Image 1 (cartoon, rainbow, N blue to C red):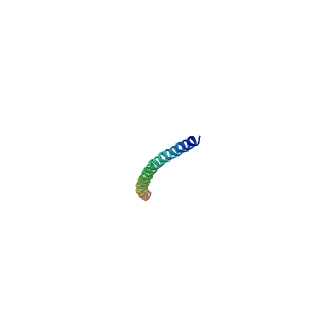
Image 2 (image 1 turned 90 degrees about the vertical axis):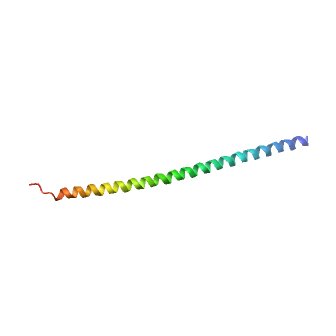
Image 3 (image 1 turned 60 degrees about the vertical axis):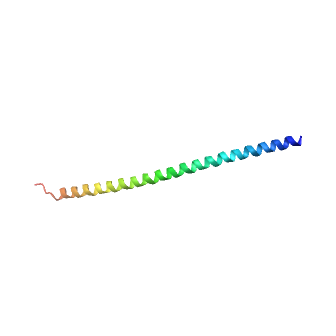
Length: 75
């Protein structure tokens, strides 16, 4: 009878250790995924910054050209 309780306890401990190992492995996977997504986010922010700079440069050129038209006097 007592031996059965020890066997039951041993089985529960083995199950907990196995579950812990699986959770630890999953945690490593998720940390890797998070790192990858952080890198992607950084790249995307960089691309957005470049596109905004290009947009601002194009807007400045257009404003400059429109300014040239305003200097033209039509009779």
